[in-house]
Length: 228
Length: 382
Image (cartoon, rainbow over all chains, first blue to last red):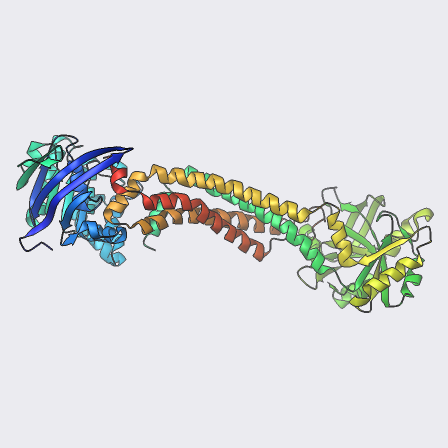
């Protein structure tokens, strides 16, 4: 998966420009970044600096205006929409700030979603879901709907959903941004465990310096440029 | 199959809205089936018409009778193989809501002219040998719970008074198009009970011709016989008579087809709106599914599948309800539609229509969902 020099993620001169009406808004301006396999990287920066945009490019849910984003051996800009979706399903687990669970599905059904895209049998899917929920200490809440869970529990279900298909890369967009201190600490501990025990490569966007302390590497983004 | 649960969960998200949408589709399809059945009933009555049977009536109108003496003269016409006659009785059973067709018929010739009326030989004998006997169609017998030996009081409107008839036979139709909702009784019983001034008057003559291709010539010959009399006739095939009867109320088929299509179209617009609202409310969730790796095509199929399932549910409910209601109630619209039953073809057509409604109503939201850009959708909420 990683390149010869051990990089799982490689960004080369990445630019992202949004267009509103006739106005061009440059969000990323020539970003270069390498993330090694097994690394836990924190991406910090003020609001509007382009953190989430950068994360979206790495996760393959947006494409750069210019430059190359290479993740897990694929240059994402060259993939057509359907192939990019399949690539995401295989390689990326996404954790959102607002958890973004499907409210009409139970915790187990939410976790199962990525597995619906695989060829696993019903029993294999159930086993994997159980394992993922045990990993986030929520095995006893499998039949609970999101409205029955606390914020911290919802985020743990979201993490279980992100890891259940055993992706190459976990990306987290301010995963503790909507949680109190206690729950935030639990989530960060969980992410750290996933990195250390399961050797998951994690890229986490955060505003919180304490959260960033858990990472091996912290990079700062300001007005679309990575700080040296 | 593994995605069905996701589709069902989404449909159950707003139970009231789903129920109301399914219900409105069901009503549209119920009305469609009803209107379509009116058309198929017309067609069935035309199909049931015998091409080798002519109807002779007064040239001015059905309400004017013809003399009984015409029978022998009609029988002499070249190509005529048999003549029978009868009167439309126009009564009701117990109360005016219980309307159905009753005919006083000449027993000696009736079965020769109407071979499609099937009766057990013993019942036929019993019917022939008793002046107040009648035979009833299988549909009527089932509707009112009549059995052989029952006395049926029929209240006359054209022929006032209470007429007590005894059921001596329950007939079946030769084909599914044959009317099984009529009572036939002795014309003699009616005739004898009338005042002298109304005696020996016949409403309709039925004429059997040797072959269908002689219909036009025989019709002209019959009418020519009475052309200069005070009671001229109009002779036509049974099919032409039925078609003329139907055309008296205008181009019903076209009207009903337009009406049925308009109802379905209106409900389809409502369903499109509902599906678009439902998809719009779930923009973020659709973006989440795509982030997880659901392809554009899969998302399109899931959203479109919801609309299709919703429409098929409503369609099955509406068509099924129409079939059950009209079957169980033995609805005949006062005898006007003796074969009013929802045909399997109509149910099939209704379900196809529901499927088309589902596909069309799901098309716009499904395409929108399929085209949704994840980053744009997430930027609004995250």
